[in-house]
Amino acid sequence: MTHKNFDAIVVGAGMSGNAAAYTMARRGLRVLQLERGEYAGSKNVQGAIMYANMLETIIPDFRNDAPLERHLVEQRFWIMDDTSHTGMHYRSDDFNELSPNRYTIIRAQFDKWFSRKVREAGGTILCETTATELARDSGGKVIGVHTDRAGDVIQADVVVLAEGVNGLLGTRAGLRETPKPENVALAVKEMHFLPEEVIAERFGITGDEGCVIEAAGTISRGMPGLGFLYTNRESISLGIGCLVSGLAATMEKPYDLLDGFKRHPSVRPLIAGSEVKEYAAHLIPEGGFKAIPQLFGDGWVVVGDAAQLNNAVHREGSNLAMVSGRMAGESISLIKSRGKPMTKQNLSLYKAMLDKSFVMQDLRKYKDMPSLLHTNSRSFFMTYPQLISHAAKNFLRVDGTPKIEMEKATTAAFIKARSRWGLLSDAVRLAFAWR
Amino acid sequence: MKTAIAERIEDKLYQNRYLVDSGRPHIKVRPHQSPSPSLLALTRVCPANCYELNESGQVEVTPDGCMECGTCRVLCEASGYIEWNYPRGGFGILFKFG
Ligand SMILES: Cc1cc2nc3c(=O)[nH]c(=O)nc-3n(C[C@H](O)[C@H](O)[C@H](O)COP(=O)(O)OP(=O)(O)OC[C@H]3O[C@@H](n4cnc5c(N)ncnc54)[C@H](O)[C@@H]3O)c2cc1C
Ligand code: SF4
Image (cartoon, rainbow over all chains, first blue to last red; front, side, top):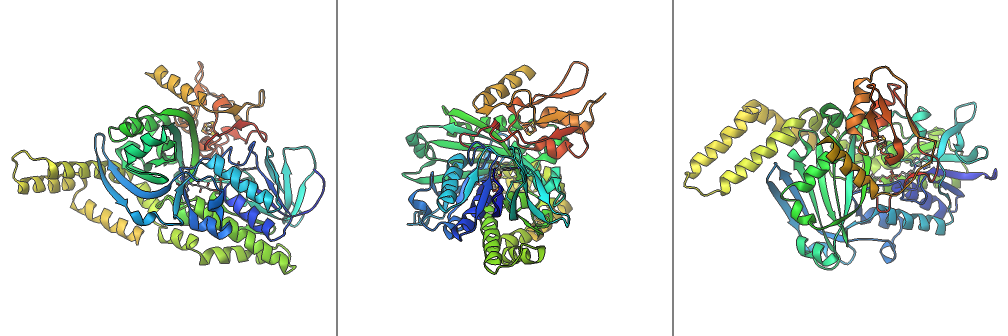
C-alpha cells in the first residue's frame, strides 16, 4: 500500500459501510474501503428484509439492477406452543405497487452489488484485508488504520467504523464496549432451496410476491427469542435467534433450537423436501437505545450495528445501518467541503442528523422493551404462548361443553399461571414499553 | 443422542465454504486447570460446536468450522479465558448466501 492520503477510510463493506462509502465517493471524496471478506457480503448474514425507502434515498434507481428476491405482500405473526400456532396475518394487494416498499434479499449477492456501486462512484475497495488497529496521533486523534497486509499505517482525515456488531477495532481502542451477552442475540439460519412454483403454491403467492413469517413462543424454550421464515425466489431463509445471555443460562444448543423450529408441525410442511445449502450464524444487537455508545470523536464516527443501531422490536437493522452510513457520509462531506478539520466537535453534526431522523426516534420509543422482555422472558415466551393456544383451542373445540364454562376455564388458566396481579403488571409494563 | 447431534452439526457445517488458515487458529483458549462456568457454556452455546471438553476435563477449541459470529467472544473474552481475533483477510467462513 502506498502512502497516499485518503479523505476517509471506511472499515467494513456491509450495509452501513457501503452506504457511507457510496455517499462520500459520489461527493468526490477520496474514499478507501476495507473489507476482510473475500468479497463484500462473504461474512454477512441477514434474514433478510430490505426496506426500499432507505436505499432509494441513496441510489434512487436501485430497482434497475439490484439483486432483489421478492416484494412482500403478506406478513404473518405466529404465537407458538409445541403443537400449534395462533396467528395474525396481514396481506394487502396495496403492496403490489409500482415501487414496492419491502423486499427479501440474499446478502452475499446484495452486498456484492452495493460494493460495485461504490466502485462505480469512484471508491477504492480493498477486500481480503482486515483492519487490525486504529492509528492515533499523540493527542489521541484517529489518523488511520493498521491492517494485516504488509505496509505502514494507511492514513485518512477520518475513519468510519462500519465493522458490524462484533467490531473489534472500536472496542479495542476503547471507543465503545464489547456488547454484553444480554444485549445481543445469536441467530442461526439455514437456506432451504425449493422450486419457485412450490414456494408460490405453499405460501399462496404469485410472480414476485413474497410472504414472511415471524414466530415467537415455546420454540425459544423460555428465552427471549424469535423464529423467522422468509420467502426468496427459489429458497426460504429460516432461522431462530435468542439472547446470548439466555443461551448461556439455559445451555441450550442453538442448532437444537433451529431443528426444533424446523420440526414444528406448523413449519415442517412449508419446507418439506427442501435442499439445505448453507448454515450460518450471526449476532444481532438487541440492547436498543440504552446500549448506543458514543457515536463520534476526533477523527472517527461509528455507524450501523457497531453502534447498536438496530430496532429489535420491528426486526429492522439494515435500514438503520444504511441511514446512519449515509448520514455519516453526508456530514463528513459537508465538513470537508467547508474546509474544516474532522474534529470531535465538527463530527457531532453526524449525531445531530441522526437524532432528527426516525433512527433515534424509533429506538428511543422502545428504550424499555429490551429489559422488559429480558426480565420476564418465561412469561412472554413460554407461559403466554401456551395460554393463548389453550384459549384458541377452547374457543374452537366443539364437544358439548357450554361456552360459558370454556370461557371460565380459559380465564382461570391465565390467572393460575400468572396471578391477577402478574397479568395486570405484565400488561401495564408492556403498554408502557410500547408507548 | 450426543453423537447424533454431533453428526448433524458436522453435516450442517459441511454445506458451508471455508478457507482455513492452517496452523493459525484465530481463537485460542487460555491454559486452565478446570473450566469456569462461562468457558464451559461455550461447549453448548457455540453454533458450530467448536468447543469441546478434552479427556482431562479442559475446554479446547478447534475453530475450523467457526462462523465468526462472536458469541464466544461476548461471553468469555472479558474474563481472559479466550483470545479472539478475526482470521486474516480472505480466510475463514465464506458465505455463499448469508
Ligand atoms: C439472522 C439475521 C436476520 C436479520 N434480519 C434482518 C431483516 O430482515 N431486516 C433488517 O433490516 N435487518 C435484519 N438484520 C440486521 C442486519 O443484518 C444488520 O443490522 C445490518 O447488516 C448491519 O449492517 P452493518 O453494515 O452495520 O454491519 P454488517 O452488515 O455486519 O457489516 C460489517 C462489515 O464489516 C466487515 N468487517 C468487520 N470488521 C472488519 C475489519 N476489522 N476489517 C475489515 N472489515 C471488517 C465485515 O466483514 C462486514 O462485511 C438481521 C440480522 C441477522 C443476523
Ligand atoms: S465465533 Fe461463534 S462459531 Fe466461532 S467459535 Fe465463537 S461461538 Fe463458535
